[in-house]
Length: 234
Ligand SMILES: [Zn+2]
Image (cartoon, rainbow, N blue to C red; front, top):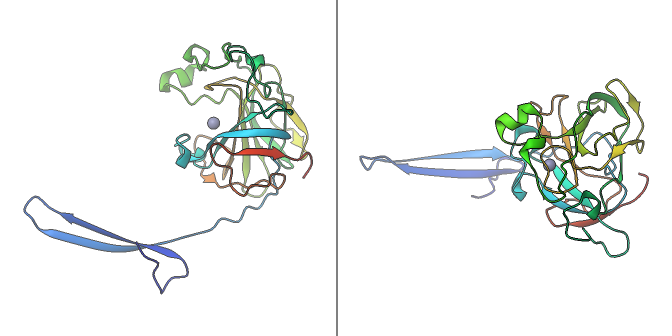
């Protein structure tokens, strides 16, 4: 691969193949590199210390269409940046469990689901606790979740809220920083955490993924294993 001189930014891909009869063919393709300029100024959906478990498709998870840049993050305790106490079997072993989740930016809630239970074991994702439609497909259940329309073609999806904690319904207008509910362990989740993704449409299962940056976090990229501290306020 090499950068091509006659495009602003691109990657030249050279593909060669030989067929069964020994005939060789090749093709050169220049793929333009595009940058996406995020329209919404977003804050991380919780304040305080956290760690990223998965930061998009390159980190092993979230290979679905809308989740290519999705983040999973756990909350950490304030003193020691600890991820859990005890043996991790109880949800309350995780300092992030119950942390307030906030609206990343102003918008209108276009989808809210609040009927799901928490996984009863802190470090296990038991399919018995998935919604029926996700049992059939073997996972991917966001549990209690919301989608917020930021009014500019960008939508925030926040998932795995604690059972019974969601405060907003579809149609609600929310302000940046407003409490939506609590970090929980509902749906397909291996430990209490929040799932966040920015997407280009209201339907999280059929929207394009968008890369995301948060104004209250120092790191430009939140990769797997990144410790971060989300400042309160924008
Ligand atoms: Zn996730």
